[in-house]
Length: 203
Image (tube, rainbow, N blue to C red; front, top):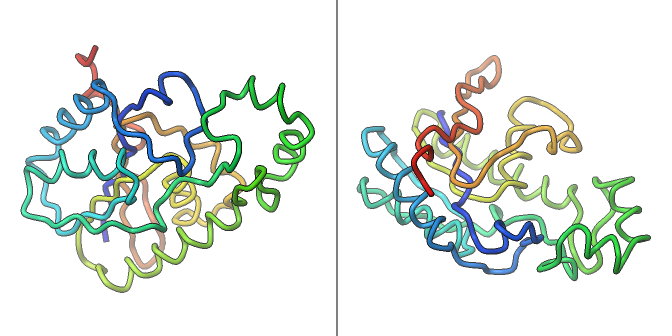
């Protein structure tokens, strides 16, 4: 199985460095252009199936790529971003000012501590792991496009490489970036990571 991993295009909250989580923020104009350019790049690649987060910034990115393929987009809630609860819509500095003790507790144990009214990294890992297991059974010899958010894609990389999910922050995925991972009986190989060469001429 081969996976193309795409983080959604830019949103206004990305540009403002606000925690988005599961708030359903749309792509901005730049994000739409990014997704279109990435769609052109992938137009010559064979893709059997497309899966995307149901949140509109990911689903719209997938739609702009899918225009070049005859694939239906399968929306899956398990690909949603980590739920940041009451922190969604705030910048890191705002969170540090408004809820410093909760932020410190979360940063000390991101695996099992959740943001206020949010979810833990452990919960995110469980749902991403469930989806990855299903994909490996249902699409063993196919090429898939997965369009989602930074958090679930970084966790997926950890799971594929048998790394602790607490190391997910060591993978950086930019908006509208392309990564590629291939699965073999002996393990997974990352062929491409956070490639953004297609975005060089995007304003």
